[in-house]
Length: 175
Ligand SMILES: [Zn+2]
Image 1 (tube, rainbow, N blue to C red):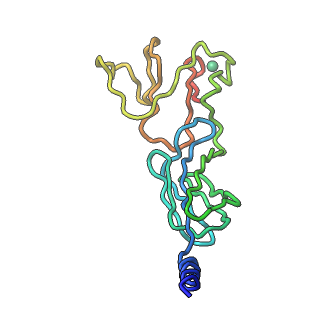
Image 2: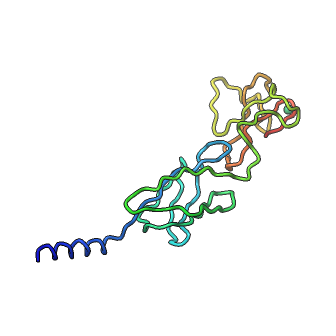
Image 3: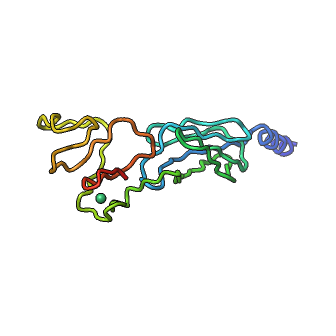
């Protein structure tokens, strides 16, 4: 009789524990390998989601075990869908998502598309730049560096997620 009660108790527990799991991961741009910032990821059928944080990470907890489609929304880009993501109970599904944008720029391609050379190509640097010496009078209105020895071009602080990496001083183009 004790045995029968114990079995009943175990089955009862099993029926009441809803098996849930977690989806977490990181998202980065396929071309630059930089983290995707400021977007959302959502399980379509559950209307449950997470913000993508400033270093490209997200986490969605308490998901019933199953197979889901995820909707990825990244600011400035069209929404995309990740199909058939499996969630197992009491475990974490860890995703590494390479976000392929329709951005034409690539960090790995530093050859100028006009002159087909790299000798006058300098990197574009975004964000605030602090100079050791006061060189602000060597820039023109567009922020371009006039001084020939300058080793980079200032790209400003507005980063869209699809920004040029390189600047050719010969042809004055960003790419
Ligand atoms: Zn060029």
